[in-house]
Length: 129
Image 1: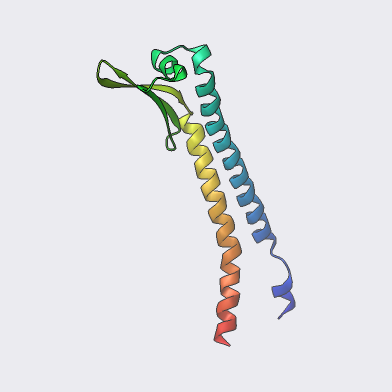
Image 2 (image 1 turned 30 degrees about the horizontal axis):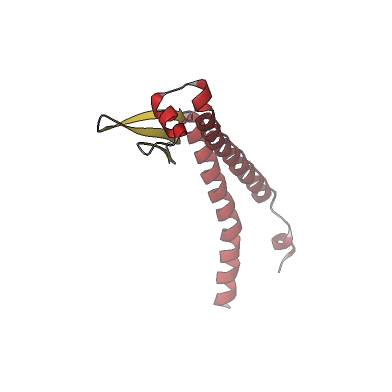
């Protein structure tokens, strides 16, 4: 092993710092999106008394609340005269969600490549010997 190989790479460390920071910021944005939907759904019976939300809060079988992951929404489905009616109770900001998802996935991928890449190179070099 040479001295140059043992010294840490400043560029690699900086890229890991930026990648992990982006991943953390992205995850925080995603938590904000999903928590906002949950809180808005819970307070919807007080703030905006929609008939579907009131029926769901009363515990009727004809109303249900479903959550979608992408895009993050809370949708209340209610049976009105035999036909299902959907009302969006809460929805996250699409630009905020998209930014969070790109930062989280991109940061994790960058860190994964920077950590696994050199490990694979060392393993391949060791197997060739």
